[in-house]
Image (cartoon, rainbow, N blue to C red):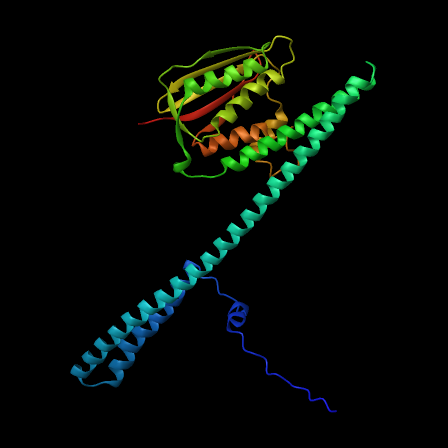
Length: 316
């Protein structure tokens, strides 16, 4: 029994062929050069060659009119082809960026979720050890574990806030009553940390246009003020005033102030140096303020730390 080998002709794949053609990037300069070359050639043909070849003035006028119409048609076709190709290239790049952003978002959320769950397990185990081990020097190592797990959990929360606040656009700005925001935030912190002395001075008729995550940024500023205080009686003062079209919110404390390493990380945006500061708290505040159309500032203070939120006043 003989076997017959069949040789199939390779099928022409138009889509694959089109994708393998190297695409010429349509920069404004290249488009201008193409139009300049074609326009110069058309003028030379019309005003030099036709005049040289044609003796009849009537015929020359007719040919130049026809040439003008053809130029308009070709120019319109060239613009259509160039813009369509540029738009198609932009659509492909945007689709690729959206897909990449979606994948990174899922990856970051899964990573943060798993990391936080693991830290909760570590924290629970360390708390059990604190209860089981006598009060010896070994407890200090366990307390260090607890502090570090709490720090990692806070990093995850800050990273989540930064991700949520990177959506730009005026449609994400909301009118926020600054007095209500400060009052609710301070009340929450007082309930959790009754030993902290927090005073406020915020006018009741001040509203700002800001990102919805402004409350998280304010809570971070006040929390940092008392968490890093090197005194048994931490004091925090929250004061707001108006500076022309801006509203300036001051958070002043009697702690050690903001370390220089945090300033450097904020100024370089974390890209120009391997020094990234102690955490993401200041980055998170800066991100929210930037997305709010405002700014984060630090001022020297004789009493300790001094964080400043610059926000846009609500014009409505």
